[in-house]
Image (cartoon, rainbow, N blue to C red):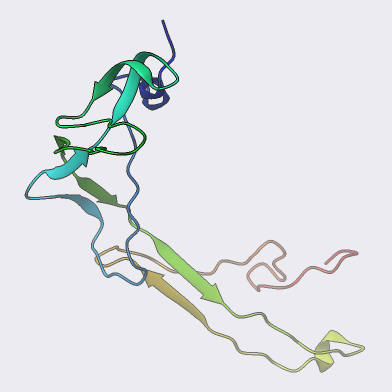
Length: 152
């Protein structure tokens, strides 16, 4: 098969991805959202089928006029293409926890008690559950503790 610009899009019946960016901070429930009306795209093109130095046979959008040396050039009316538009919003949660600094002391019993908070933000209508377990280095069976570089 021959290579043409159309091959860049996986052939004449291939897919060309469109990317849409939604503004941050939107409050949208997870789910699939579909547009009420189809997405309309107007294509303007002139792709060579067989051509050398701009002379030859071309696949062109309706009304395209090549002109001579740029004089009389016109993209024409283009070709309409309709497609469906859907967006999938996934459930998501973000956890924000502050660093904890116990300070410096010669003995653990001399460290100041520290309190901290954590925030959780989930997409609208996303159920969530928060719990803290005994961690990776529990002391006395059920007390959360830090682990030093040399051991417990």
